[in-house]
Length: 103
Image (cartoon, rainbow, N blue to C red; front, side):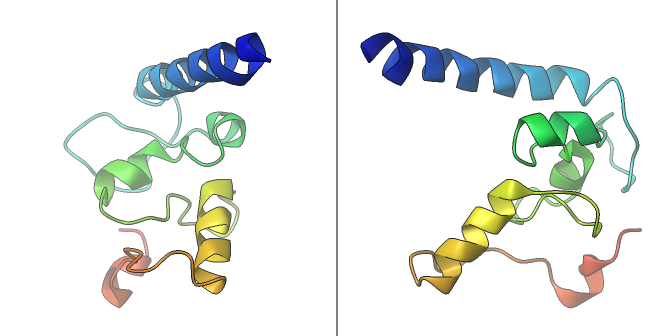
């Protein structure tokens, strides 16, 4: 239990973060024009529950939602919405109405 429950999960989290910060600045597409080289990468988003929509995150880092297109699967956003529905999450940062459409 200790090996899997603590160590393996912690290492997986660290590597997921480093992985996203590496590959999503090299490959993928850009929804928003940002000063950095961040990109959205669909398969990275699937592996990391939505963190692969990195260009969206860099364009609007204060917003809780990372997947902006209907087909950009964002499991983390679904979890946040569930918590909002259960009244366990409040003051979730949503994009203002004019910013909800890319570009």
